[in-house]
Length: 503
Image 1 (cartoon, rainbow, N blue to C red):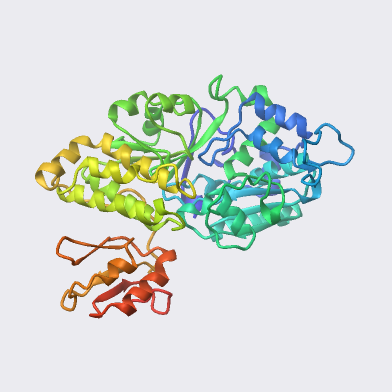
Image 2: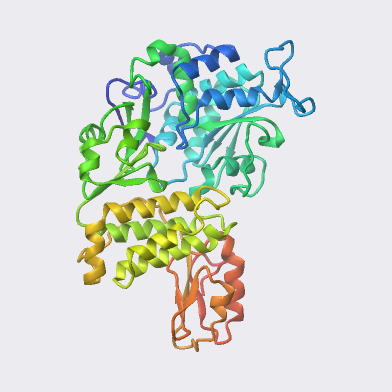
């Protein structure tokens, strides 16, 4: 329950205003705390967003004003000639009624809770932002895409209170579910994975219409900006990056802090030590060692100076006592299984990265092997998932160099991997490939049929990658199990009756 997540603030609340008094702000409480909704004209809204350089809070940090005006440029607004047609655009321009505003409430990445907290406890603030943008674009079509039952209930209740024509769409809770193309596909009733080709939502999004799609916190920030005005909004944060941001610390605490706050101050506020290193920006982010943590400032510019990123505001300290390389390998295995499997860098590249990490953990591999595996296919993926995973892994090679040396020369660091970095709680559907060695004769057919999961050693016997079977590989695995000449290939785990069944 989001009401049980510890939420606090540094320097005064904005997004979290009223959280000290109410578990959830219904419409009456919201109006008492934040005041009546104001809806600026499009040009005024864009000007305010530009003045404070408002950026998306979903991780990419794209300027909101540019995204807003990119959608507006595709719209023919009755009685307005302020947006002239570009050459060849006569047929492409749509009516304002065709525009869609989508609140991206996908938060499939483990360790992030800020958007769930906003949707669960301050849904009207998010809907205010969505309504402000929709009114400026001349549309009433608003979609809120969410993953959890609690968020869906909270948003539906808020929509009902406001009597607004908005709908809620449930998303599959996966790591890649928040990618913009995946969200659009989910809203359109298609399989919720990135489309594989770059399609700008501003040009063709929901139902092929121009779509303004942004993160939950971004719309909440837009509501705060409209309420406060640019000058008061900029009274927090830095001159270059005004405002506050929401952070999730250790996967369990949400903190609102002004941009420009030191990372050390946030950790001290949460009473969380940096441990062996701090991961900033989540599982597509970067590791910071102790020296970098001391210098790090939570802003785009501040994080760049220490080689980090704010991303979606996920901060994960790695506690003492667990094996850093083992933790990094565990997360890389999860990321490999979470891919959409629609391009080579995901299908083959990420499993190779996991194999190289496993070998390094066991003392038989090298850092160069990991770097080589992570470097193959960089920039060639169908989405950013393989590049983000590679960034996470390569950053770990730098941050935990001392621990890696112990593995290379001693076969281990003497510490167990306790799994302190958050991953989804298993629901029983997870399944893996296994070999019955009393039957296996080394035919090698399985490695030919599912090379992503199985490779042959130098003696021709299968070596299984120890990751969950990705959903896109289920049919291939079934085929490999059925075709194994020795009936040695097995699937272990999983729910009986599911597409990949337990043997």
